[in-house]
Length: 350
Ligand code: NAP
Ligand code: ZN
Ligand code: ZN
Image (spheres, rainbow, N blue to C red):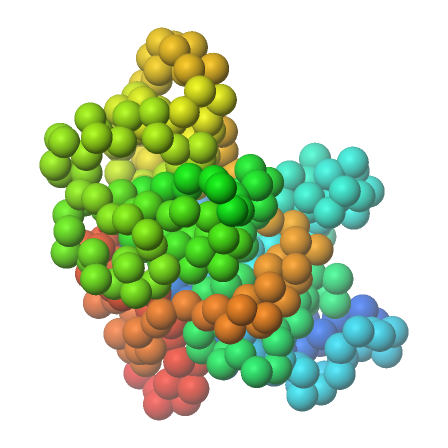
């Protein structure tokens, strides 16, 4: 077994603390990775605090993993020691269902194996990237373009693909008016990627505090949703709205900003159900949709796209000892725009 050091939440709502555990030795098709950086996704906080129910503890969160291959199993063909790689939100799926066959492993009929807070199909609990090593089947490992810095690339593995997938699916591009609600970890990737795809991009943020950043990241327009004029001014304007906010917003108000046939895609996951009035949809043949991360093939496509366009995340690098403080700041929207843990800090002990 491989001795692994990390940080875990011992129980719901308790602070994360140092935690040691074991990972399997690489099997024939496995890749062993030294983790160098791991992003902090808001989903880590939802799960560490058991806000979605069913969390398993102790929990080592982290699904925005970037590192370097240290060893490979005998039958691995695609990776070798020294390669720069990433691991995202899942580490296995059934491979046989229609969705897996179509490269949509995130919708696997048997249920994908989450990178953490999940179970391998043999029942072993999975542990995530707030740790120094991970062992993953090569089919679920991604290649990070060599020239991208690993710290800024780590959050592409969740925040990047979660925005890239719906932007591509709903064909964001030249001539399309796209809005992103919430300029956080997910939202700022949406701005960069939509801009690179050639769409007209508007940020809808709770205030104008992040306006300069939004424009620098590539937004064409920036509006505060605390200003009621925003909703009258932009009525019927957008082809596509991507909602990254986990707070319970009035979705009906935002649906009114869509053109006829426009779509609002939910990415943020509120703790409680949110009411939707039928008229908000019927009144413009509008669609309300949702999207979950992205499949392996599309995640690789996104990484290559980001490589070509030199897109990485804007990050604040922190030692792992500051993870609990970072969680509090994420909850206050006080991060520009993703915390990334420098895993080397685990060697400092404590
Ligand atoms: P984040 O960095 O905390 O960003 C969320 C943004 O929402 C904030 O920056 C803020 O933007 C806005 N916001 C926060 N509280 C608000 C409030 N009370 N009212 C209005 N706006 C508020 O979080 P994230 O990591 O981007 O994740 C966002 C959500 O997506 C989480 O629920 C996460 O679990 C979920 N998620 C979903 C998927 C998926 O596959 N669908 C994948 C990853 C994460 P402004 O300051 O600009 O208003
Ligand atoms: Zn995530
Ligand atoms: Zn499947």
